[in-house]
Length: 388
Image (cartoon, helix red, strand yellow):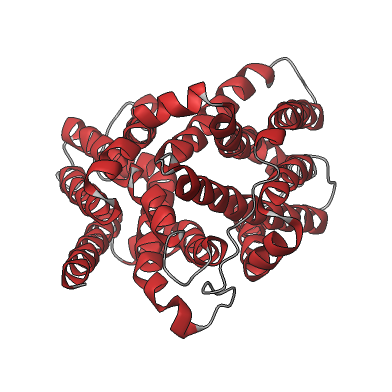
């Protein structure tokens, strides 16, 4: 918890991690209004699914340009501009009156989501290198916390503010004002200008990033799958009778993920990023094994164990991607973020096809196998580091 103490007692560190929190406060608020948007525009599941996929298209389309923007504008400035424009852009989806406009607005949201995501992770990576500290995991803990804040406050305000656009504007204004107060603590931070580092996406230069990107792909696919399928798994595979308990799996997963991220930095500082990814994958493997028993209590505990295991992996993946020799942090993080987020969005869809062909239990068995692959990749990385 030393990293959390550092963040809460140092304005520079807190101002940066608050960007993480701000990003997910907006997302957590928007999620509450997806059913409302779907009903108002009279959309079917396929249409709303494609509209949400436009967010991914926006993210992926601008990923290669973010390192260039960071070089031209500055890391701290781009982080601040990213979160401000992102907050404003997220007021559009609840305001538009046509399906085409919804897709365009979500594409714009995706662009600034991707820009902010890469910039804020690169900013944390730069601060970690400059100050010789570990706060990446806790920063992602604040991201998780932001979702809880957005959903909690939103659940209260949704009954008070009858117009969704006013609600989103209020939250966006609050986020912008707080970040305006804090951004001076990081605005002048830029990436270290080292001639040995590359800004390009060439395969040869980015080869060391590939195994890390594969880990991100698998782990973020798992996160997306549990978010979308855990409730259905409890209802259809575990056969619980009380539908009010169907969300217990995702709740335990989210709680343990938030807790794990606040403790991750201290553990990482002691044993290193690759080892903590390995241990996290072992915990996730144990969690999936529990989930596959289909006993309600053991399955629910399993989801919590998976959350604890996965919690430390993505922050460490970003930390590793930001410290690869010869690769700028923004470039490595762009690649890892793009591939990982692609997994987050496409993973649940692919698992849906697997479930439709076989059953949902086979889908979760697939996630178990993929997590074993992650563990094997980390074993190879640890062996490679010993040889070096």
